[in-house]
Image 1 (tube, rainbow, N blue to C red):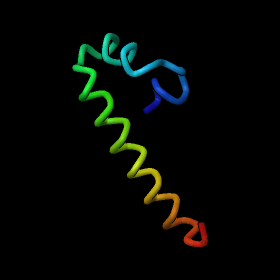
Image 2: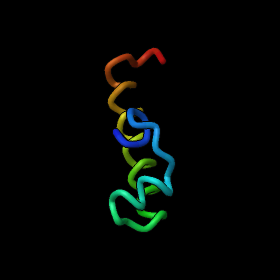
Image 3: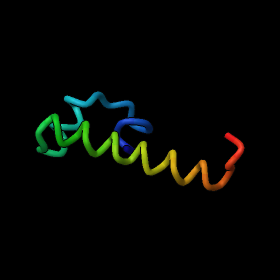
Image 4: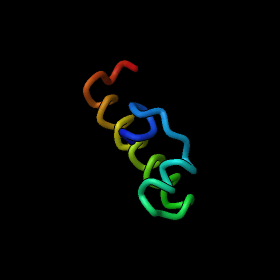
Length: 47
């Protein structure tokens, strides 16, 4: 997620940097986003 949000790389760019298939990159970013959403909602359950 760091490469996507902080380094502003696209999914294909991340796939090239990491040597991963594009689908794997998308899956990792999606799972990370879901995990972060769960952690943040537990921290502030009103949102």
